[in-house]
Length: 182
Image (cartoon, helix red, strand yellow):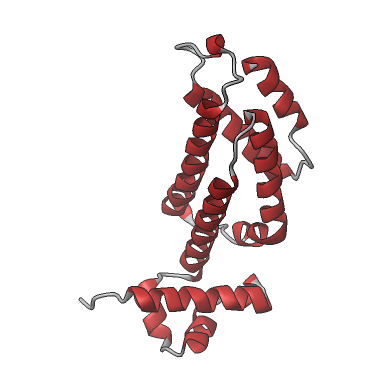
């Protein structure tokens, strides 16, 4: 079996990203990626089984970068403020760039869903870190039945639903947070 070259894999993803950026997601296909990368069509299949797998890899890469930027921008202050800023940041990213990638992932199957779930888990971990960093949260807010982890999961699910529906801001969710933990 031939050893895969990570540099070539990255070049293929770069070619796919450039195609998507310049000509739209519809233009991303194995042949066009191979042409842009200067390799044979079969070479692309050595790294990716399908166009969907390439789009999933692009989406995953995009969200990793977005989460790194979000983590770097996370500052002090209240959890509610951070949650509101995070929502706005993610909403803008989905509106501007990620939405078209995410909408192209119709047939990724269970493996793709698991890979995207890992991105959500990373965001959930960020929520927990921010909850722990907010000294203004009531000391008695957390119990065995109402943990930071459960609350973060609840917030994550609701934030994702609001983002999917395009809600302009998470005002009701923020009210729930304020009433529950402050």
